[in-house]
Amino acid sequence: MRKENSLQHIILNGGNLFMPSVSVDCVIFGFHDNELKVLLLKMKNSASWALPGGFIYKTEDIEDAATRVLKERTGLSDIFLKQFHVFGQPGRAEKKFHINFLKKEGISLDKNNWIIQRFITVGFYALVDFAVVTPQPDFSSVTCEWHDLDSVGDMFMDHKQILLKALETLRLQLNHEPIGYQLLPEKFTMPELQKLYETILGKKLDRRNFQRRILSFGILKKLKETRKGGAHKAPFLYCFDLKKYRKALEEGLQGGW
Amino acid sequence: MRKENSLQHIILNGGNLFMPSVSVDCVIFGFHDNELKVLLLKMKNSASWALPGGFIYKTEDIEDAATRVLKERTGLSDIFLKQFHVFGQPGRAEKKFHINFLKKEGISLDKNNWIIQRFITVGFYALVDFAVVTPQPDFSSVTCEWHDLDSVGDMFMDHKQILLKALETLRLQLNHEPIGYQLLPEKFTMPELQKLYETILGKKLDRRNFQRRILSFGILKKLKETRKGGAHKAPFLYCFDLKKYRKALEEGLQGGW
DNA sequence: TTACATTGTGTCATATAGACGCAATGTAAT
DNA sequence: ATTACATTGCGTCTATATGACACAATGTAA
Image 1 (cartoon, each protein chain N blue to C red):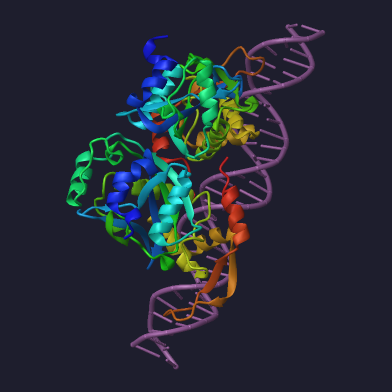
Image 2 (image 1 turned 30 degrees about the horizontal axis):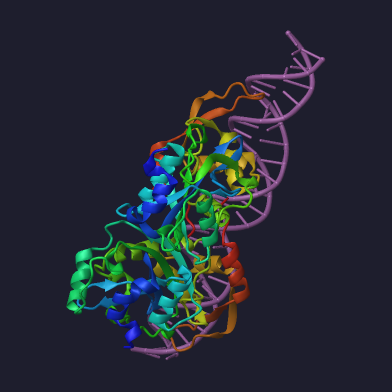
């Protein structure tokens, strides 16, 4: 690990590099084996799992900071990323935890060190293609892995709460914008898209009504190919009509008032 | 003005009291004369109008900070308030503007003063009853007034952008949660409620279809009284069924998926 | 060749949304 | 008093959307 990214370097010099008191945390969703996955870090010297997060350089846009974190943990650029909530309770970090954590790493802190001040964090969620991600741990963690969303246990600080809020937001967003372009491979079948929706929503949908509805949005192109190799009738492949997809992203999907 | 709230006191001692680099700004909506209003501050020594905002005490929850700002500017407690977006571009504040502003007030700053560092701000929107608000300017402003939403001109920093984003959010929220309890007096007529929706959405709605839809939510109670005194047929008065209203707030209004 | 889970497509009843008709009513003008 | 009239209350009609379900076609495996 290069010194610039080492834990010690960041702890001791971060105060000069980063905005004080503000961080970003990313809930990175992927989809694989009909399961919704989330990318988590295993902290050093701890049983806790944490969301990938980071600090904001003094002249960096917060969206850019989140994008950078994403790039560093997944190797991916140009990803769907959206801020969804700020978590700003004064007690969300436990000072003792940080101090003990750093002591185990052989780092002792001045009591005014920037890292043990109160932080608020801006939560972002990202949708990425599971298949092309190369998870990379950061300076504070030993591993970076995909987890099944429904088997995530206790987490670091308030990260579980952040994760749940991201999921709630994603579910609501499903009514306003098309989802799937970032989570599925380029070509996919209708059952695969349906599984994605069912997984995000946590409930079963009627196969025929789902198809009718999703096609009515006019964002899919039906291809002439079918997915051979499955044990049953070969389903047609679809891809997103990117032009219409983007238009739907901007204008929103359905009406209401 | 008490010294504790004076401009000079806050500028010179704020660094000890407040979180660095983070502020809150509130878009406070009211409804009067069939117009959507927003509460703005006229800055001292400037033609600019600004959103009511403030800083976060070192041990204060950010939601509480926004609640406090609201209380200070409107006199109201227990108000509908919701964070909607973080504005964190590095260039959103212009240092020169602040320094000139303070110079005119006779305050000269150390170049490391907390107030001229980069800030990100958490945007909140609030819905309040126009009739019971007593606007109060803060330490940085000379007046605090309601403005018609559609005649707001240029604003301080990125406040216009914040305002527009709040409006956009409110419009989207209209599909998920009931609105009106906070913005209307206790008893109101169907045309008044419709005007509120039309004003927020910026478009006309059909009178009969509106009534059918809003009643279908089951959050209104029809009273036996009518609103006398208008120049036409007296419309019935309604009030919110608070129990069902709150339930609808929690569970959301309509389905989607 | 057959069994079978799965897919493609369609139907039917019901619910919802948008456009509009008409009589009732309260005030103001005559 | 009577009338005019804008507005309100309550309804209809139609098009579209939604939910539940039927049935034939198809690709693999037994």
